[in-house]
Amino acid sequence: MIFPDAADAATAPICSAKGCRAPAVWVLAWNNPKLHTPERRKTWLACEEHREHLSEFLGMRGFLKDVVTLQEWEAMN
Image (cartoon, rainbow, N blue to C red; front, side, top):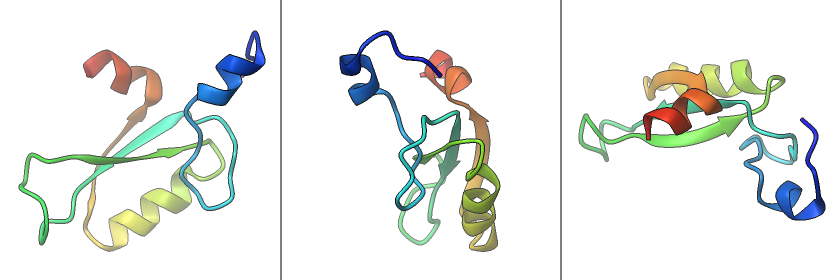
């Protein structure tokens, strides 16, 4: 992803993986059923490299509800 200027780069969504500063491409929608109502969705953002790892982390706990591109998520919300 190329940003026209530094201001855009500073506000662009970035990956939620620890230490990653790559631009986000994916939205992982999740909830913890012990804490959240069924319709509530929290989100993590992921770059291409970390999408699978973050999805597996949430999926193993039964928290992962949906994975969509950032572009799709923004269009829905």
